Length: 117
Image (cartoon, rainbow, N blue to C red; front, side, top):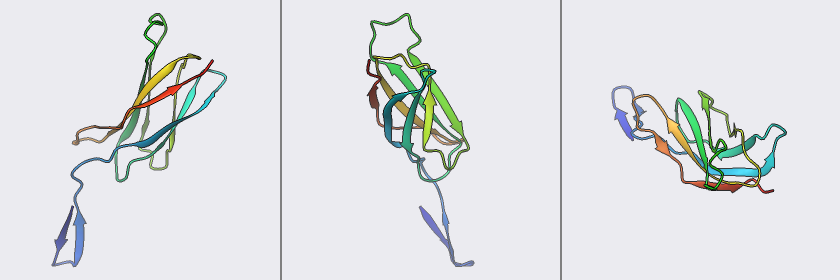
């Protein structure tokens, strides 16, 4: 939203809502320490942090750590984030949250990925 300041001849932008992370993508490769790199298109504008939350869709493996979370803070150039420990041969669902103080968190669309065998 733009409010025009006629005294200074400029437009003052007011952010009403945060933008959401889009285009979540897993390349299909896991690192040696069972880390998955999730690429994303960062939101427009300013934010304090982006958090990725993933959970297993394979509920038969309840004994293993199935929830994955990681956060990047104050990073204006970040386009990927790592989550671990990822279990091989499982399917995960992930969401990205855009967060900023005094704003409601914004959740991305759900993204599913499979770590293969």
